[in-house]
Amino acid sequence: MRELAIAGAIALAGLPALAEDTPATDAPRAFAAAVVPLPDTGEPTPPSPVIAGGGEVGATPGLERDFGIGRPATEDEIAAIDIDVMPDGTGLMEGSGTYAAGEALFAERCAACHGEALEGVKATGGPRLIGGRDTLATEKPVKTVESYWPYASTLIDYVHRAMPMDAPGSLTADEVYAVSAFILGQAGILGKDVTLDAESFGKIVMPNAEGFVSDPRPGAY
Image 1 (cartoon, one colour):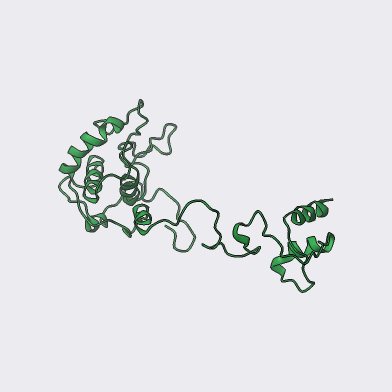
Image 2: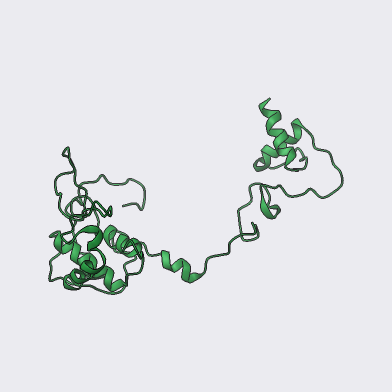
């Protein structure tokens, strides 16, 4: 019954009968044709309704498969989200920021959600950002930039991509560095007199850098 159901479904899609030397990649279609041979009407076989544009089963999707909606993304649109920063600094933006500049910017754009002392605000859902070192193995772990994240790249990437909450992605590279410098400075991870940029980033050691097991996959961090 299962074979007949499969064959029936494929037959309804309008697939033609295949020869015995059909490649293995077309085995499902060949099997269906063997169980329930499809009539040869002499007319071109209409494309499967599942495969827009009449693409072959197993074919690699491409631009020729037109679903009638959407459009290819522009280079500028791709560049706007292709901003990930890796733990080794790959992907860091050009620019720099200081603790002092970040302090003023944090008060203006971030404190409403995260608190003036970076303690978090329950009403807005903004999490606490600093403190909590050595609490992860306790009954009440406090997960913050200071206690949990093993790489500073996570902070920079997240601020750049998703903050502030009311206008994600609106901060300039210098503002991202400045806010990150302020948070890292408040956490005692980066000196308050250090300008954060691609060079100083490479010298940052996060408090919980050794708190995670390594990923055995090639190229993973």
